[in-house]
Image (cartoon, rainbow, N blue to C red; front, side):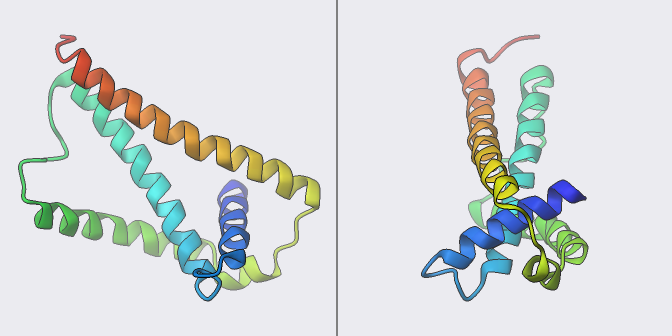
Length: 132
């Protein structure tokens, strides 16, 4: 829970400084955290696809149906995180400059590594399609 709040706080402060997101930093931070969770779910789906050849993403649907499914599946996650980390908690949260600097570095590394792992998993499936 502490990690989630710190992650939300760092995204909140980042989006608070942006010109286009300064009016909606809480929603932007919430969306960023949900997107990170979706990336992790895609990583799990890619691992399942690599080792079992079962496509649990059902990519045979049209793009519209895929977007609707993502919206339906991510809405509960969005609401749960919204209930766990309130906007007021982020507005009054105080962290030392050292924690913020270190957290920003780890958050950047975390986002980049998560995206790279997802890309590597899908590239693995493309170049090595048959493991079993």
